[in-house]
Image (tube, rainbow, N blue to C red):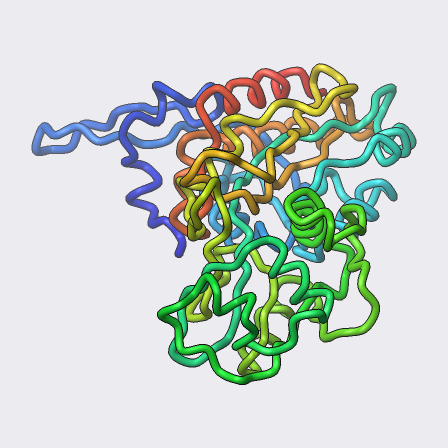
Length: 365
């Protein structure tokens, strides 16, 4: 859902923790009560972005909220998927790309052609669990080990009442129904996160390296997140991987964490990100994160995507820089993260990460 105008201007504590554009002023009403309203920022122009469809709900909220503080600026965002967004960015078609996996070193190198005297950097903006969602009548939750999930998506476990599934779900009335795995048809950062999880947590079964392209031949597929959700809802017995904000009335898996199983939640996802370190070999201003997919502690949901905005430190079109930096400052602010949590169920960035991103944004030109 979108945050109302009232909530946009009345969030408490925003100024104290936000290092960016959303300062607060006061407006005394005739009753003497004091209300807070957002200050505007004097940036103008239209800027386009494209990429991760996982961010779709959050971006709609961010665009509306940013319009409140930057009425003369317009942000457009096409949720075409991470792969297509990166392609557009590297081709100079958009000012920033949303991607559920950080740009690779090779993609960073290619970005020198579109960034002025610099190469692109990755800035985390959105943290969300990836749900292993399924369509089984009367069943809303199942415990699934990574090895079981890997075998399902490889076509090695084909029935929902398979003993490997039943072993961890003794109270579930599992049907003798064919399992229909659904994967992304397009190049997808969600696919790369999912295959990275399987490769790390079930390496003996999932031998393929992480990839934005689905590595297994054949099977059912859907275009972007919306296409996978549509396919999941169309037939009983289906299972797929989607941003958790899109689960709706589908069932979802609790994943192995330590010696137990944990369902997805913003809180359980945030624990993975809090312990993450930046990837080695990156530039100091590049905040690509390395996530631990095999936590030994209980209560941590390991299948998490960190969605980034890929941006230029210096833009060839200098008019784009102020709008890009102020929009992303709003996105990572306490207010922006709260709006994403309310609209998409995402986990907020930590105050420390927000501060890091904001400092980097201040240097964009």
